[in-house]
Length: 295
Length: 316
Picture (cartoon, rainbow over the protein chains, first blue to last red):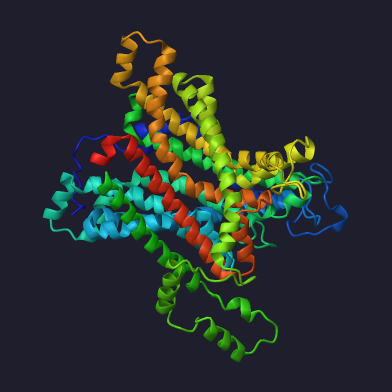
């Protein structure tokens, strides 16, 4: 039925780049900083290891604890004499990928639960939202660690359990959004056309709730990167020799006095990545909110 | 009011029941299970493992185990630690004061600083201070707490030598002043995220109040700007903050876990990590439940107190 396109209507072609939303986003200075920063970090992590002279796993015990900017080690070396810069970029690949994939899973779980509860309302809503509340009653790090400690700690499982502890906010946001859209005329029209519940939920309601979901997705990437850093720092996340920003900090505390760069460098990488995603999320929120044009 | 209170407590109990199901099944269904610790013993035979499972009731159907566990839990019997066989509840309560002290001090710091920053940001809206506070808050929310702890130790403990790098007291001392001296760094580190959140909420709340009619009335009466601000604006803006204090419990507990680890602070968070290291299921499970109880109490108190001070909520 969507094939009957009103071809002769004189509507301007939709150009996202020129839309008001996009313009508002581009004017958001912090969000643009975030976009540039994420681009730089991603490129550095993808290309960095090819450019640097040292392999991330190359152990050189004569060069242990070399300070930054000595012997071709931009960020120094670690207790095994491995190049911190090479490890940082490899770790970035893993941390960013885990964060991004965890977000995808988390958004899928949260969206499905949110749409179901918002659309059906009543008992389904009550049951699903109490379930969500129950998950929110655990401090997420406690739940995450409990899960991480008793599973096989490979990147895939870490990604899944991070998603399992971050979907709740998305579910709440989507549920509220769908509940308010449900009573609108176009949904009534869809019902009268006899469309199935599934079609209405995922083809009619979901596209209209996409704004808040995108904002939540961006902020969830930030949270997921942070959570990966926490579990890996505490020793239950990504396991060495595979590097991640979190597990690079794992042994850093004992060398704080003699080799502070081991703590400073990965920490700055995490903070930059997380801050950037938070800035982008904030910018998107402002850009998608049509009211912000008025103020 | 009584009806509201009873209803609200009932809701919390239902949630607690759900929490217990999730916690229990998540842990038991995880591969390995409680028996994995015993299976590590070199040379242990299949018969021995079966006997241990039998003695601990781990060979029964999972539903039966859950009901049995919940029944004992309700009677105050939280099981015994795999590590030293002490009752779980006693172990947890031993570690509770240190965590409460840390969380309480962090909240006090966060409230004082956050409220002040929030008010200043709101009355000087779009000033350099406001802009810096906004960006600063977003960065503070993005810094991993443990990393901030490491940096704080590096600067204030290793380089400046102002504060100790860890532990709760000097061995052999343990006076109040000594504990406070050890408390400064971890409490400040834990407070960072909270300062950011409090300042954001306080700014919004203040701006909301400033635009309301009764403030215009107060101004029109000719009250001084100072008096309007402190008596009318701040008082009303603080009201929604009560709820915030209760809702911050999960984040604070999570933050306390990493802060305690970095600063070797003998609280519940460290206990949790140590117990994970020992595969000490009863204590891990007990702490999961206990932290959920604290979170639910926080939410409950927040709702009850705001209903108490704001009649619009309890009558709605």
